Length: 457
Image (cartoon, rainbow, N blue to C red; front, side, top):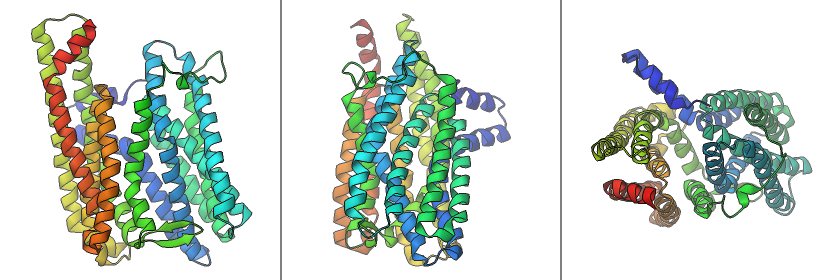
């Protein structure tokens, strides 16, 4: 259960250009591997499966169906992800790992039951024209993918990042292979192939959990008891995931969207640029993980250890200053590196669209979506720093504000016309990033006082 930070620090100690490149490449793959593989997997199935699926519109129906499964499962499990992460961290700190597995079973049961209670009635009522097989496959995929995110969050808490990436690589390789193999069966074959890959992905994620944890009780629900449950984390998890997707939902169901299958809509004008933009966050995510898991975490632990151990005021102030410096340098480097990546994508945007046989009319929207995705990396970095400092109130305000701003500004930009598409998402992120930096400055200015008073309370 050694943290990824130890391995990154070991690589960086070599103090060579190759060592630094290796560390940042490693961190980039680890930090955004699962998300990148999910996007690439869905796109590959669409591109490679086109010659085998007749009519070709079923490829679009498959991609839209799977996108809704992923989006809805993230929003559904968002509250439990953060709550379970905190529960697991607290139990491990208390040296009570025997409680983790039984509560994992409890979370899985709750997730599965809720996913079926939501998806089964919708499948019956909202998809009357689709086959029974399609509806059953969608219900099953929703339950499985929801449990994938629960397993991912537990492994992330265990710092098993490599396990997550390699398992996602295996799972989505199988997903693509099975979907293409069953593509001759049409839409149902594609979704069945996706489901098989997700089941194997879930199995690969669950195995290290069972290898690590044991317990005398098979299933328990302590997580949902008052003293273990943090309501703020439930709302934060929900708000963050809803905030990420709300602009997509608005574009899907406004005049910019088209009905694809049943009640599911998509927006050709918005979906392609935003998915391509997310592929450009790898450099920023790499810097984010390296700085958070090396410099910041090291000085964060040193500062709080100094306070708990009663070190001298001079030493406490020095550790505090080093932690603050690591935060500011980390955020600055995330912005700097992601800005370079953004400029590169600006230059290569036209070439990328032509290579994918996509009209260059998408270029303006692609540019603003690249900026928005880059701001999202900065926003994620700020949120994680607040989590390390246990400032849930600030995170709740930022994520709640993100939902409201993204929804309102996206509606406004749609009303203003195509020239403004994407600016709502980018403007919402810019506002919450600036607000987050302001909150962070205030928190860091009073860090010693608040920490010392809490220790004495």
